Image (cartoon, rainbow, N blue to C red; front, side, top):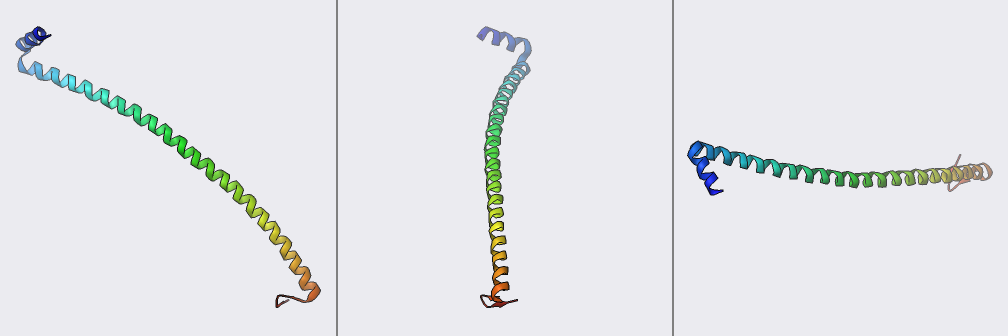
Length: 98
């Protein structure tokens, strides 16, 4: 290896050594960038799974909330009808007169 390096230095001079160093550095940078891109891809997949879980949780809460509101609306309809009947019968309810 040392003889190859010396022969290269003699044949191409200092500019050849600098160019080879540049190529080695460039190769290293590309390898690091490819590792970073793979890590970022895995991180994005994990984040998408987490966000999907949040979305599913919100959807289930929305369904539960709609069911609860429908149940409350039905109960209020019953109470309003009961109050109408009491007002019609008694003429008043809790101080309210029609």
